[in-house]
Image (tube, rainbow, N blue to C red; front, side):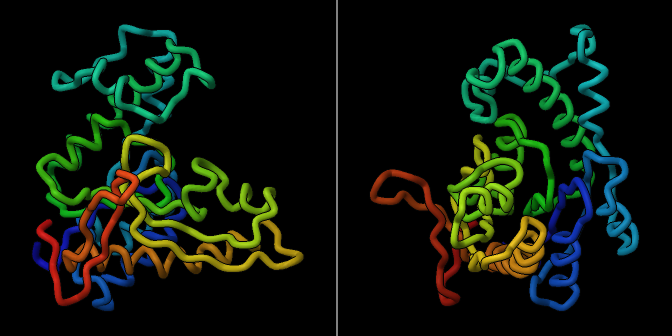
Length: 264
């Protein structure tokens, strides 16, 4: 892989991590550039940031699509290349403990519909790495496999606001504080079929001090996030990330020294 990489971004809100990655590209810390920003939220400030830097951007409104299909099965149209039974069997996003089988199928089908729209938009912008920068939507096996097909190293990267595998899902810093943890932090990982469960690339942590609130932890965490994410993208760009099996059989990320390069 060339050390200059083309980066696609999925974002849902303010775009703070997006801005950190833009800045890292502009200063040369990352040898690469943004080729698109996509959001599920038409009002996301991340889109304004993208426009300010001349980055192509577009919206795939998951919420509007789901509302259209709710109670109207005829509106659900899966892409022709979608094997829904295969996706249903692989996904680890929804549990029958929390949702009825019918609701799980509905959520997955509408999610795949949105992803198919996103894939059509993305096709106009060839990229090497897809970065989730505060993107709140879970990705299905359909989308993940389309992006990763034929790749030795995954190319969807996410940042989660806890020290994984603790507290997957929403409100990571809040859960950290409420559980009385003495350390808080963030994790950058490759995306798999579960929720914040993919192979870990790197982590950063800080002490939870007496008097810390969720807001103070979020503030300290964001500073770490904006430093850690560009560093992990840099390692990807340099071909220094590869997957291997641990002694327990789990897939983990091995970071190569600068003298070596992974065959990405």
